[in-house]
Image (cartoon, rainbow, N blue to C red; front, side, top):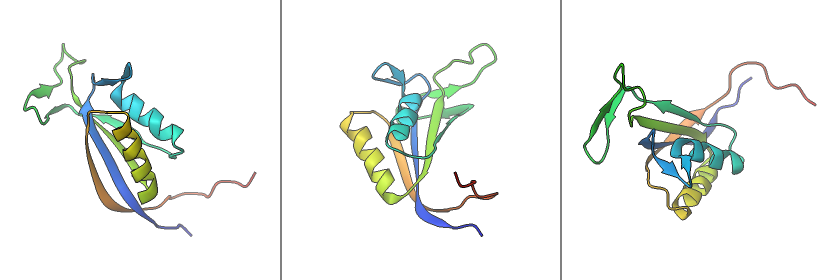
Length: 114
């Protein structure tokens, strides 16, 4: 029987070309979360969008590498979200984020015991 967990849905928004400490920001966020012991996260690229500066970016046939919006998402416990947000703040990352309550579970076979 599956267990339903209570936590938060944490999403960061940035541009695909945004960098922090020499790395693409979405990669840096995923690596930082992994180092914090967070079990998983995903990055998704938009086909079109604009941000807080009002500049519209869209994917075009000859400009696939434009500065498109990226969404980096995590399903976390409240404690994990606080830890990750504190780390991102401390590092001076420039990104927008959203956090919302979430219920989540895992479907499928349970992992085999070692």
